Length: 227
Image (cartoon, rainbow, N blue to C red):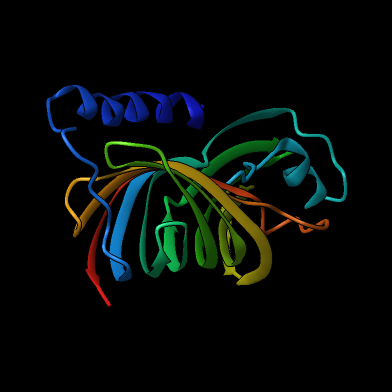
């Protein structure tokens, strides 16, 4: 899904080469840079299930159940970096993903249970960036490093029956350091301004139930002011 969204962005960027602006190669200035990316993210969370509600009643069967959830949406990343030469850079960034939202309603015996949940996901990354200049200001690049991924789930529930109801809520914060990597196509509009399209992933390692992998396909813009 994310790759399908990324392909049209790559095509749009590549068509710049057909607009008569490729008379000579333009290279970004070595030195410090800052930028931002915006696109589509996936935090790979799961919604509330009938088993989740059943387990709260000691495994009692759920006779009626309905649910909804969404774990994809807009995401954004801000970053700073340093371009050492045309082939290598180091970069640090912060990404905020769209919240995962879920809602479920179930009936267990004489009780009706209504639950809502949300997961806030953020990441701080540190990456090395290898760059392969192609021509006309275009470059391919790959990134690899680590990300500190923060997941903040919260849930609220209401149980009603026999003319009475009771509500409760709670939240937690979980964090993990996971490998991170990405790849993209960039175009040097001027020595100071660079745009790109990219795919980025933070890869879950281990058996955490709360901190999952993330995907992020984005269009970016960066300003290079040199050393």
